Each structure stands twice: as structure tokens, then as C-alpha cells.
Image (cartoon, rainbow, N blue to C red; front, side, top):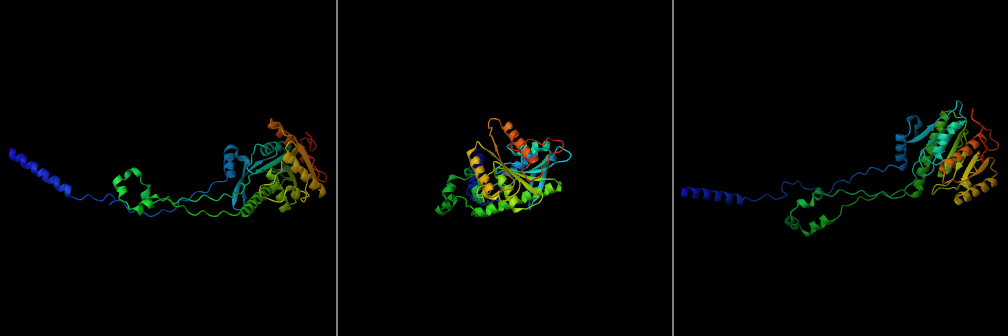
Length: 349
């Protein structure tokens, strides 16, 4: 019995020794060869803020209000509100300023919803964002597949076996694709100008299709400059009225409004807040320039800012605008809304 047990133990020792002599396969023998580099990821272009604002309005406002207009190769949102009378007096195209949506709570939205009760249809447009001169962010090139493995998977002794050159390569940060040079500011301004004018052209086409008796451009802030610039560039017999509220020039554009407005020669209502020094000084320049040019139908209306009560402030503006529309400056026949009082003269509540 002892001899048998000794023989079994000896055979087990021989078998274990034979297994230990077999060489272990390399740790990375089964791993596929890592590629040197991967193609850079494609970054989706960021949406303009105006597009995001328009998408938000599409979710909030009823479908009959929303109009998708075409301007060249792009579409944009406009908000349509039909006059609440059988025979509308005309249509007011509302042009918001930089950074404002087609339903901006100051000036744009109140007039968009109030003027229909005074016999005027409204169409509020969405303008493209101001030009951006910040260069695009370079796209990062994805590192090699081997570098994507978690650091904890490698054994300390395997890391030490690499050559100094390999270690330096592993320490090199991911390469970046060269950034595309941004267009120069003048090119960006020209592109935006073309886009804005195309959108106003589309809005005018919409108004013509509705056979509006009168079409009025009303701009707020820098939107007033765009409205005046459009009138200067497009002489249309259907479009001969301009209203400006807190008029301003968009950054980087010329000419100033005191040089632009007097040469239009169209009935113009220029509303400004006398409590604000910048608006008051700019309005004085426009008034003096209009007098020098002997503008036949330019009228300036001073408003009082009421920062503590926006509702009353917006109601005051609406009444002044309604008064101007029902009794425009000398030389233009007034078009009082049927069934609606003519309103107070421009400049009075």
C-alpha cells in the first residue's frame, strides 16, 4: 500500500513539472494591433440663438399664429395676427432688434397682439443672429485605440518594459485638427445683411399676398435701422411708411440713422424715451438732420419711461402708435380702422 501511494505521488509531481515548463503566451499576443490614429470626430454646428428661440415659440404659440417663410435657402418663423375687423386698415411688419425674438415682451409682443384690435394685422419676423467673429473651436483627434483602455488594466511590470521613446509618445496629448480661419468681419456683416434683407423681402411678399391696403415697417432698437435700410434698398410703392421705436444702429454697420432716415422721404414716426440720455441725444441728431433735409413727413414723439410699470409703459406706446397709424404726418391720407375710433393724435394718449 505504501509503495502504491508513493507511485501516485511521483506521477503527480511529474505532471505538474511538465505543465510549468510550457511557455506562457505573450500578454498582448491576442490583442489586435492598435491603429496610429482615428479620424477626427465631426462636431455638429451650433444652432443660432434665434433658431432656438423660434423652436421655443413654436411649442408655446398656437399653430394659426405661426408662419414659416422662405428667404433664399433658409426658412424662418414669423408670427401672424389677423386684424379683428372685417376690413383691415393695413398690415404692420414688426422687426425686432438684435437678440430679440419675434415675440419679444417689450414693444414687439404688445404691439403684435394689440394692433389687431385697432384694425391692423401684424407680422412679426425672426432675424438671424448678429455675426460672430470668434474662430471655431478645433476638433480633437481621437487617440489610438490602445490609449482608450483603462489604466488599471495594465500591469506595473508591463509599463516599465516600454522604451523611453514609447513612453514619450504615450505622454503626448491628443493632436488637434487645424482650426478653420474665420471669415473677416466685413464678410460676416455682408452675409448677415443679405440674410436680413431677404427675410424682410419675404415678409413684404407675405403682406402683398394678403392684399394689405397699407404696409408699415416698424422696427425696435437695431430693427429700426434694418427697416430703414430695407426701405433705402427696396423702393416699393406698396411700402411707404416707417415707424421706429428706440432706434439704434447694429454694431459695425453704417450709415448712422441721421444720415439714413432723412433721405428716405417716406412718412416716418420716430419714438424715443426722453428719460434715457443716449436715446434723447440720438433722437436730436435725427431731428436736426430731417430739418436740414426738409423731410416732408417726419415726426418725432417723445415717450416717458416707466420702468416700474411695464404694462402701462407698453400701453402708452400702443396708443401713440395707433394714433400715428390713424393720422399719419401731413401729405398722407389717414386710414382710420372701420368700426374703431380714430385714436388720439400722434404724441397724445
